[in-house]
Every structure is written in C-alpha cells, then in structure tokens.
Amino acid sequence: MAKRIDIKSLPLEELYAEMEEKGEKSFRAKQMYEWMHVKLARGFDEMTNLSKALRESCGEWYTYTALQAVQVLESETDGTKKFLFELSDGNLVESVWMKYKHGNSVCISSQVGCKMGCGFCASTLGGFERNLRPSEMLDQVYAITRLTGERVSNVVVMGIGEPLDNYENLLTFIRMLTDANGLNISQRNVTVSTCGIVPNIRKLAEEELQITLALSLHATTDTLRQSLMPVAKRYSIPELIEVCRDYFDRTGRRITLEYGMMDGINDSDRDLERLVRIAKQLSAHVNLIPINPVKEREFAPSGADRVKAFKNGLEKNKINVTIRREMGRDINGACGQLRRGATGV
Ligand code: SAH
Image (cartoon, protein in one colour):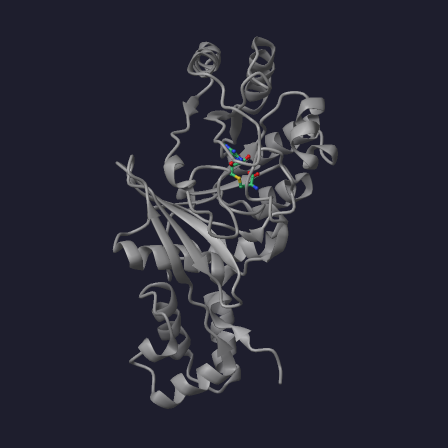
C-alpha cells in the first residue's frame, strides 16, 4: 500500500490539488483546512460538515497527527507551563508556554533530539532521532491553544532541535502558521533561533520572510566558539557576520544575537569589546542569557554584576540589549533545558 499522506502538513494549495485528485469538490479542501488549522480539530470525526462517507475515506487515505500531552508542569514562580508531548510513533518532544503582558508565547521543538552537540545544552544529550514534520510543529501550537484555552500570539522555534537542519519542513510550517487561512499569526511574531548553519541562513534570506532570526553566538572568538559548539568548526564567525549582514540587508529585519553568559568562560571585558564590535557590524539586537543549569554539564551562569556590565557596555555603544528572563527554570523549561523525554525536575 502506498504511504498515506500526512494531511495536516499540506498547505492549502496542495490540499486543493489533493481533493481534486480524489474527485472531491474543491470547497471541501477549504472546509477541511479550516477544521485542521482554525478550529484545531483532533480528527476527521470532528469535521461535522463533511459527509460520513468522506470522513471515513479520509481516514483511509491520510494520517492525521494529534499530539498527546503526557506531562504538563507549571512553574510556581512565573506561571510558565512545559508540555511533554507524545508523537504518533511514540517519540517525545517538549514545548513551553509563556504568558507575557503583550500576549502568549509558545516555544516549540523542531526535531526529536538534536545532532548539534552544543556543550551547554540538554537537548543534544540523548542524540538525534528524526525531523519533525510541519504538522507536528503546528500541532504543538494547536495542542497548547486547546489545552490553555488562550490564543497564542508569538511562536519561537527555540525548543529541541536545530530548525535550519530541518529546512523544508520549517519553511512549510512557517508559511502555514502565518497563513491567513489558518491561525494567521503575524510573521513578525515568529522567531527562529539557529546555531548558525551558514548556507541555510543564506537560503532563508532569499525567502524574504518577515520573521526574526536569532543567532546563537555565545562566543566572540572562533577558538572559544569551537570549544563550545561543534558547528563552529564548519562555519567561522566572519562567515556568520557576512551572511547575517546579507540577511538584514535583504529582509530589513534585525538579527538577534543570543549570548549565553557563562561564568569565567565568555564574560570578560575583552569578550564584551568583541561582542560590541560584532553587534555593531550587524546592527543587531543582543539578548543576554545567563546560562541555565543542566545537570550533566558544569557551566555556571555569570554573576549578576557581569551581566549588568555587559548590558551597560552594550547600551553605551547604542546597542539594543535585553536580558532574557529565565522563565520556567524551576520546571527545567528554560532555554537549553528541554529534552526528548520526561525529566522530572
Ligand atoms: N538549535 C537552535 C535552537 C534551540 S536552542 C539554536 O541553537 O539556536 C535555543 C537557545 O537556547 C539557543 O540560543 C541555545 O544556544 C540556548 N541554550 C542552549 N543551552 C542553554 C542553556 N543551558 N542555558 C541558556 N541557553 C541555552
């Protein structure tokens, strides 16, 4: 039997073509798209304006992803919730829901596990299993919308995995998430974080999306960066600067530089000077992240005085800087703490 199509990964144009091929009227595609991507139906049986016969045929033709929340943890300090979801093949991923004054943000995973091997991150510890399909990325947003009963206004692709290592699926996901026929989230409210895969940043620039691109810089010299992030052996900081400048020129969207501050590792005054230079070259926004603890790793976060010194130093040079709040740290839901399995806390 031919492999069944994952219907929730089809953009509306492809769903039109699919329905046509099956001999169905084209408005059926529109109805189904709305059930999947606006009403967030969990199966064909919820699609009550389709005939029973069509619903049954769809069940034979297609697979329909729906995540199961197997664990939900809520932070006692800031109300952040972390969801452990089971995929249809039994794999697990985590997603995080954060409530801010300006709206709700969801941090999603893009892969089951990660192959990038960054020395300070928990997501890479269990290795890489597979890419997530567009439907499985969308489903994290949909499931959380259903479970919280609240609209999601911002999506950050900063959970488990390297999004630019799952490029085609990521692009389909972004297009569908921001499609006016779906949840219609503004592209400006979508952020993709990458460890710096240069050729794919170049490709992304050509898509001319209005999303925010965040680059995990974390070090200002290639030597240090290579010791923290294996990907730095493939792409140097000068190459990253060049491709990020090009991204900014083409899209008009400022890059965010993420800088995880590690005590005694990358928080000296020399590091600050170099960070200022890089941020200036890119007209970038800098996001300072006191590194979050991961129990298998020995990195400690920089002290408050160093974080403050970096903030002041950057501001003195007219660089836009924020300190990332450690939302959900008590439930291991903060940056770099997500895993492909239940962690407990
Ligand atoms: N693979 C992508 C996205 C996932 S990580 C990337 O590398 O950008 C999201 C962010 O959390 C990245 O900036 C990552 O470097 C950072 N991060 C990883 N481990 C961390 C930790 N222990 N504390 C704080 N941030 C961490």
